[in-house]
Image 1 (spheres, helix red, strand yellow):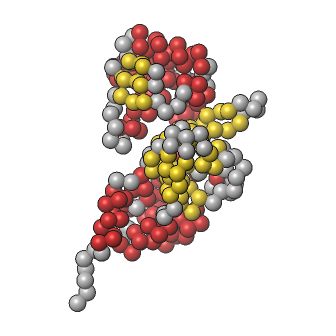
Image 2 (cartoon, helix red, strand yellow; image 1 turned 120 degrees about the horizontal axis):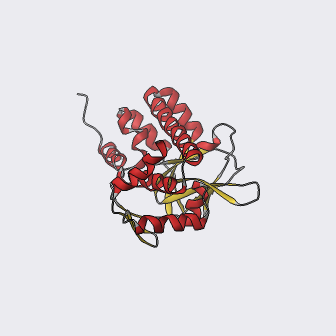
Image 3 (cartoon, helix red, strand yellow; image 1 turned 135 degrees about the vertical axis):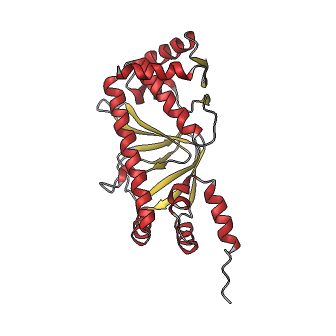
Length: 245
């Protein structure tokens, strides 16, 4: 008689995936037990990345995507004058390495802002599995589309907003992403420096510091170095909305 029960190791895998940043690539797409095993065998290598260490650097051959399991990263490129230009911040549940797909070489550096851990996804194997499992391919395309939309949003942010609007939009986006991972919607610890925030938002360090102080004076934020508490989320949203008026 055929045993229709799920093997214990698959139950364990499903439990692990349900709490893992890779859940977007497996559980929601309804993969079978056999397909889940294939995925688990592919996503086997985990890598610890120390604070300040590079996961990959610009020009390096692209071989894999990396899902941030724990920790926080920034991606950077070198500006024309040699300065570091921050192009993004990635937290647990987000992918790193999509920049390398088009040219087979990474276009930026990925640097850990704190001790972190990533799961490595060999891109060749992911492509092969995606061809086998149509639903996996569809989900991966959704993830790529979301990154494109996010990049487009940053371009709009830098092109049309004043300093206060840029910082408000950045803080709201950060708290929304953290809230989706079960963290507080109003309290956060910034893993990046004000200088790095300024680089990302196209603002000088002095402007970022002054804007934080302004928000604190207006009782929108409570600021204690890197500890930020949003006291009036509505007011912060109104600052962003002003850019659309």
